[in-house]
Length: 388
Ligand SMILES: [Fe+2]
Image (tube, rainbow, N blue to C red):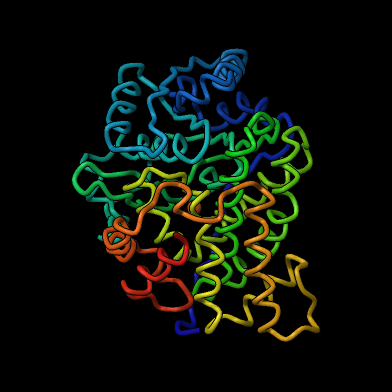
């Protein structure tokens, strides 16, 4: 512990359980929202969930406006267009509905409702949080995937116009006022998306537990979140209607996001450029990279890897740390096969020629700063090459 004074904060209100979406009216009323902007994407509209939530809002006497123009990896233009819709309809609050992308876009829209563009001035790496004040319009977050946990998180990731880089904006003011966590909304997720988003949730818990820093509260949440994710992800992938597995995955996703206020690690730094440059699915590439980074971290994190192996019931306490750490890495590789995710980046179209640029961008990403083992650019090159 380098600093004897620590600040711990877990203030998210979570309304959790099958049917939680029907609390929308009551929660909106509590927050003084009458004219919400419903921020979502084309996929959520196409599967009928946007209409379900719009009808629920209307039934509760709200006057919602739909904005479904969020890209799979949200860009600054989506935020600009969302703000225009918000102003045009004289909205007084935001409902984010969908996976991480619409939820992140919704957070950024409420940010620019009272802050000027461009978004680059709020970049967390440039101390942007200092420019973010309170008093944002209220926000209700409704997740339709169990992955990013953005519904309980205080950050948003947007690809900026100026740098084309996935950029993290981080402020406690960005945290939604309430997360309506309804596992029934995740029942229709196809196996591939279930697997990809679930691997993101698992990676958040694992990287948060391994991250540098003193945070026993987050550590405890991360261990249980990792355990829930490993036990329930294969079930949710193979039987999408398994409400218990879906509920546990939704909880594991929120636990991962709560835990990673402690920090993430090299998996996320390697994954971010694969989305912004190669447009690959974030959680899927996390899952592919995770065993390689765990192997890389082994020499400094054996004891923590053993804790994870024990919490996830991969090994028991009477095994040597080295053996438990190895078993964890192996189990993560097997999991990919179980949830039918290809084991290499090459299978997703990544080539050796792309690695130098990817590695440069991975170094620019802040997540690896809390990785338990320090990373150089040549480490990043080697990790991409191993995962190729
Ligand atoms: Fe993630």
